[in-house]
Length: 144
Image 1 (spheres, rainbow, N blue to C red):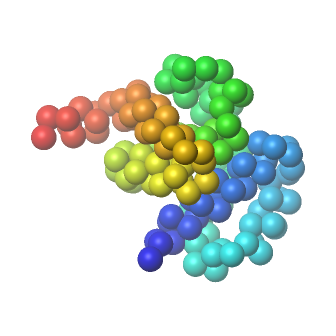
Image 2: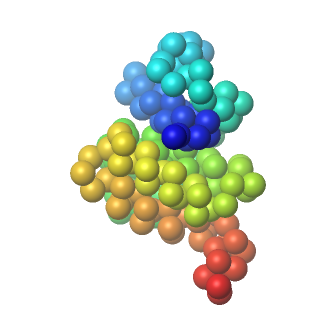
């Protein structure tokens, strides 16, 4: 059974995908997500934080991601880009969530919504990003 947080990440990814393709205002996307399947079982506070936070901070998050990418961010598939933005936001602003959980959740999102091997790319990018954004946590984990 999916956790409420996983559902909120799935819905945020869907909303960000729509935002990346259409540029629709966050209020419009939010209204559509409220009618989506699984919305009633999502962590609404986390969904709101992700959707609004990623759209608000998308430029800064993209700058954080750039050194970890093998191509310009606008050349990524919209699914991979949305998943990476959600994970980057969680790594940066939700330090209560262990970095390995953030990466695992992003990999699952990429498997659910992305292309065949997109999850491998997402995993590799987030491994690099976690060292950049969570240096102490990743170093401690590697010592064990």
